[in-house]
Image (cartoon, rainbow, N blue to C red; front, top):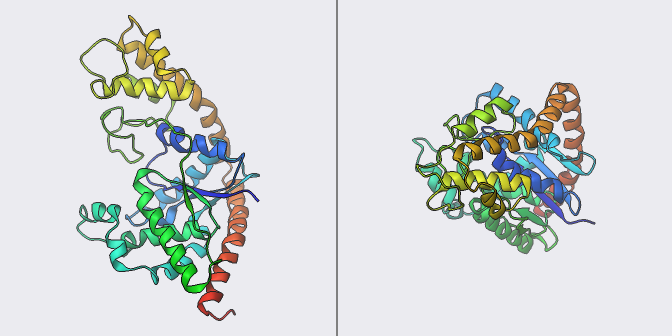
Length: 330
């Protein structure tokens, strides 16, 4: 039995080159060694009000992009979170075993709630649903970024708590998984900030579905500085350093070698080359995506099959939990 890894992306905004280099590229490699489950986490996305038509399109777009980037449906389970009812059911059970103070102490809750006039209960309960996502599948390893470490710690605490109350074999206690370090890609317009899929600045992100001309336009408008020497210096030349990072992460050429190659050249050369390298990566992804997305019935049929696959595994865990709590099977 291969160890189980589970991960997902929330369908808000657009998947960009940062998500590909930091997550999706690694997901493809993980399929070789692990039993992988990859979600589009739409239940988590509705902690913020969504336009139903936009959300539906984004969910299907994300699924097609997972496949286009190399996630193999024969080796991995790819599913939409809301299609597996067990997530919400286990989420409620975990809510009933989680202290209010534990949820209120979550850094993300404190940060996001402080910026909202009206705070929905779903934002508070987000971590228990995330815990259900993980615990349903006997997940041994969870790829986590810095912003999710606290949520994973709560998941571990809940697994240990439930095992103590109802039996040591109820849940696998997950461990954090530190994947191969992906490049940290920054905004093209505010290079001190990480590239975001929901950045309101139009030219800030290189999105996987941007056209070739759009990639060229965005790279040409990337913020650099008033200097002229191309060097890797994130503190003093964050914009130039970001373009070098993008090139290196895609091409595999070391940043030192790239800097040497640009000796005597101008920022314009760096921007043009970055656009070319990004488009060389994205062209086949865009082509595969268009083929997948043009056959929506086939995409939905695949998602239905994978939902059944996920529900089989999740259902076994939920039944074990329900039995342990004394629920009456019908």
